[in-house]
Image (cartoon, rainbow, N blue to C red; front, side, top):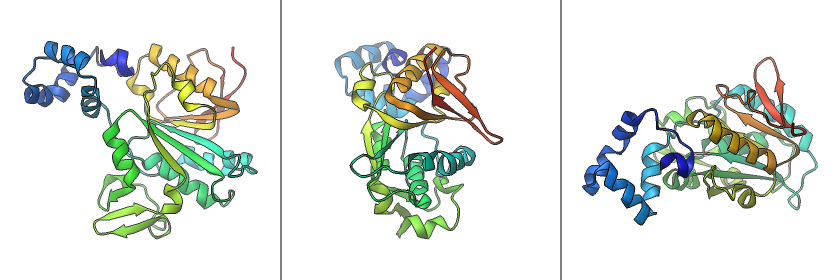
Length: 259
């Protein structure tokens, strides 16, 4: 049921799934079999289940090499966008928001765009994670800041008691939406974008689900658009229209002609 709903594949690791949902089953007084029926009659329960089974491990400036390539090589290619015709960047599976805010920081730091000329759409299937992301609040001692350049704290954050809050000039770039990457209407809901970040997500899917997601990404990207995956992820073995771009420090993909 989980695989059909969102593509996350626990079919070969039932014990791990059991440990994640054990407390929820006990709280409801249901067996796993009864819980399957419960999900069918109480569709809102999927939100609670998704919170338990999704991994929200993320932090600011994760995988700096690809971010440096994005800022120094990709962004200059899109100079000329305006608030009336903004550069559209999609942070897919954004979790608690560190990635889209990092993208916003890099955009602002580049100095290439006027206010409103870049729009970041950040999506995730976990509603609780999105709620935190929208707040822009992160605990000072959080692992979210493990790779944060020291000079960025004062420049892009405001101290707020035991938290750092992302500055409004960054937050206003980002729009958060609830989205399932396996949604058959994903293309319709997202429209067209210029750049997609979907990093360290595909490792939780099998090839069938990955192919469905990548095909959707291809259709959603504008001609010549870019796709950034995690360093441990590759779609080279799949037949897609993406061309791999290799640099000495990273690799990413550009939309080409479909094979």
